[in-house]
Length: 158
Image (cartoon, rainbow, N blue to C red; front, side, top):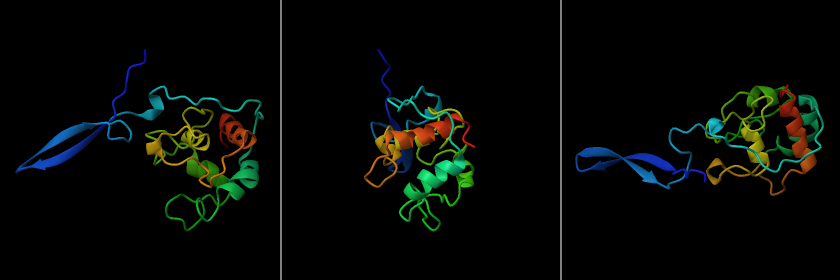
């Protein structure tokens, strides 16, 4: 039997003149003090038969530029998301950078799919508190497209 995890938020409430801290169970978000990158989180049902390697240049030109670097998402001037204007931005913007939504996981951890928050986002395995599936266009990536990201990350994300 797996132990049940209780999500807890810490909040300070003013009561008369003496504020106190209250733990509120079930209020959502990442559990306080939990690094999602070390809790045994694992991707499920990934496509198989992926190519052995994928370069940043190919990934950018065939998939990221037409699908992700769009005016609604990862393009210069959009203040909500970082810009991906060239192939080198894939490494510079993602690899080793802690995700703003991923509960402590980096956006991409070279050679490690389970510790790459990007993989949770593009496969729809993120939690509700971690935002929408990517791309947020209403059309999910195909297995072949997800395979490109798998090969790129497994190959060292260079």
